[in-house]
Length: 293
Ligand SMILES: [Zn+2]
Ligand SMILES: [Zn+2]
Image (cartoon, rainbow, N blue to C red; front, side, top):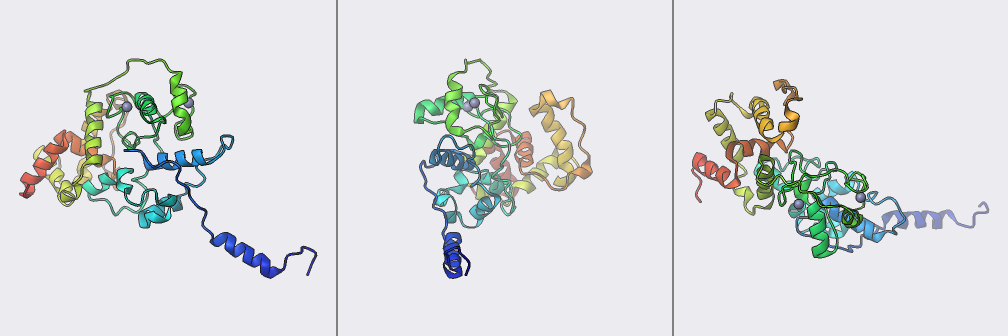
């Protein structure tokens, strides 16, 4: 043996225990109501580490997120074991019958945004800010509660929200002067409310099998060409005219052939365009498919 003073046996044993032992995940703060899953994880990481350490998302690997899909009790200390659907965009997958999508479309890592008034109100109410799952969905532009613009960077320190410490948001917002910026009752606001209604509805699975075929039926009645896939590209132009009035004139028309895989956030946009409220959507499903109430 060389002069290392550690036999191969002991060395091997040390390494196997080291690797087998799962790091404990201490939950310091349970997720708040409607808190986005990543927000709860990042906040806990921030709370668990010393303030001086810069990193906080190293524990948030794709493997973690994948595991969450298969066995939620194994990851993040089981924080989402009972209520994954309350903290992600999974309800969209339920309503539009796409829940089998295996990737992490329901837990997007990008598009993290805040509403300044939500940050302030949450901080006053519970002592900390957090990210709302309603604020991370692509295609929405304003807060469902306040109608304020959703911001992807902190208006005080300019840090992107995905890099901003969540536990520091309240402090940054303290320094902001309130500006009247609400788009309450605008089309964008109504759309945010529509998405919010989907995320919080309790019985989406009742409509799961019928939602897409009902949308197809309604589109045909409006004169759009057959079958959803080719259909959606033209419909989206019309949706965009209403929901993205500023960007619209700079956007090139979509080529039909580019729509193969349809991103999940497209479906609620089409449904909003057709029915305006979730109630109306469900009524239509019940009529088309003669469902019992
Ligand atoms: Zn808000
Ligand atoms: Zn900031």
